[in-house]
Amino acid sequence: ADTTDVDTLKKAVETQLKRKGIDVGVFIVAADTGRAYFKQCSREEALAAKKPKKGHTMYIVTDPNEQKAFRLMKAVKDEGMPTYKNPFVHGNLFLVLTIEFPDTLTPEAQSSIRTLLPPPLNIPKIKEDDEGVEVHTVTEIDPVQSYNA
Picture (cartoon, rainbow, N blue to C red):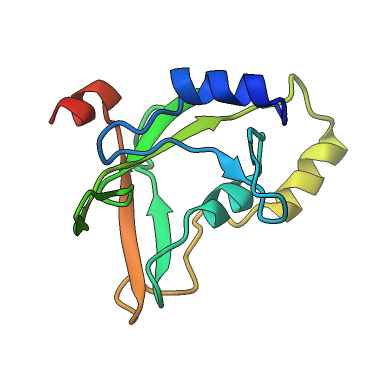
């Protein structure tokens, strides 16, 4: 939900978005105003929020055999905040994914969606071994365990 209410943001930051060591949560800061807010965003917006290292392209892939869920937390290891006085050691970048599916789809909507989606076997245009490309695997991780480690 979008909000620019300062009290709501302060409460959320105090309860949900505190930095835990070198791990970091996900929220959006508007470039034009510099104010933080929450937003349900598209996959492209979520990936754009993670800035890769200079000159690198970052791909986040999931395990295709993993059980699917409607709301889940994933993590990209070692891509979170850097440690204090040691910028070479990074925490984990946590992603909270909420997937909403419609109750039903008409045949016309199904065919329209089919034209928008990539083929079933989506092959990236850039190869993993190309220069400047980093490949990271999304894994199951317990935030408490990550903080205590």
